[in-house]
Length: 349
Image (tube, rainbow, N blue to C red; front, side, top):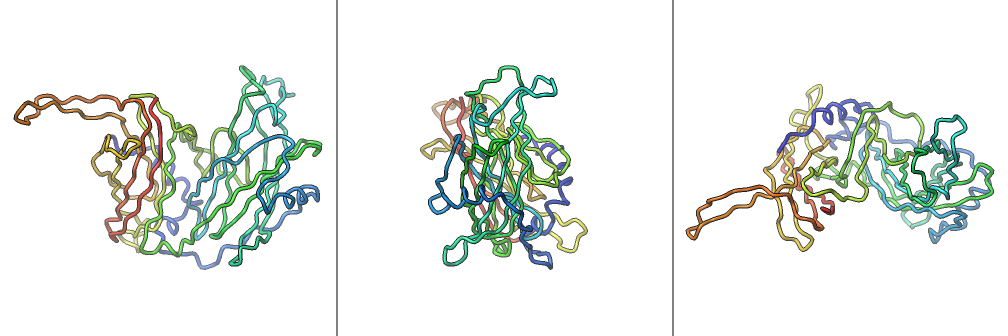
């Protein structure tokens, strides 16, 4: 199995300003507590819309859209970076030919977010609100108003329990829709003596981009610092192709905490199982010196033919057959001896 791509390691270093060594080791903390973002003024009709459906998490939708997935990633110091994914039909978002004559389709939406933090009693208290950028574009060729696209929105938050309300509105604010999601962000302090792993993402592409200074909605990808990641949202892959995985590990102890750039000593065992739990592929353990785990996994089974005495007379590799599978990722911190695991389902077509 090939080692992690050089570009992935370089990109991980490029986001060091966003994701610090404090989050990577999980044993240090910045001196100042994370402060909530400043509250932004919100239109009264948006606030009223959010409150209408907050208790049931079911609000008015003049055009339908849904938050269908969330992904929690590390951030700086004690913060974490939840990413919310939503989907909607092109026609419902108001895509129209660009006035620039580029041949692209553009959707000029108003977007608002309002976050509430849950206290010990379960009560929701307003935490912050804002207006993300939502300059959305699509290729004009092959455009269909009935086709559905997915989008992402990520932001940095301290640990805690949150409810997010995402409001999308037409430019004239006559049509508005709201969708809700709840997310729990663990305390980085609680990671001492334990490993926390993010959900593995099957990726199609990963590139360096300019780091954004404002919350922005993206189509078909998500941002993490200076990385733009195109995930395989369907988790479907053709037979014979590699399954490229990306996830993060927090809470690992550094080999030398006094080093200018502390490194970890992690070992990851990857294994594919069938839907009913039977082993399908298992690779040799892979070493990593970083909390950033990026690994292409060849979906090839090694099949052996033996004679009547049990002697192997033939070995061949064949693509993993079509079907539904689960990839298990078992992580061991070889410095502290702590362990963690995570998994993701996928399908070979």
